[in-house]
Image (tube, rainbow, N blue to C red; front, side, top):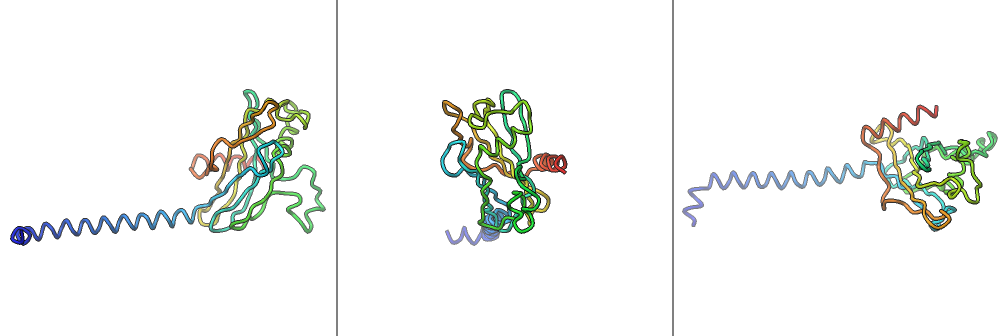
Length: 210
């Protein structure tokens, strides 16, 4: 045995070096992946206070650094058509309200790590979008039933320092129940919109709102 090891020492040393290098590369990959995840923005869109249309929409910043929210869009899928509108600003806000408390007129602004904002009820967000389309005008008390809403999506467009440019987060909700008064998210997690094609779409939305 020892004789065989001595005869093949050079080859064994080579394979040992390759194995050691592989182990180091594996751990380096794990460290880099962990570091990259920490530097990525993580924005959550959640439903609070039940599953009805009057539950509230919550936006949370679970990133390592602050984000800046540029825009919040709502896309309604009704029958065979889609309607997308910005719900960043409050429709009933008055300019004087912005003097001391800008959060009273707009949902735009910075959000520190671990913080969240309440966008209001889903009913109010849907109403705000529907009021800008004549074909979507409906009785607020029976909003989802009258509009024949199948589903809708909330999209948050924000900036995150370490990544540069803009990033987005999106979550889709299904409408259900006898009177279409119940909502539930399609997926467990919020969809992260960071690919090039997604960012181009977000940029296009922002340009339309200027």
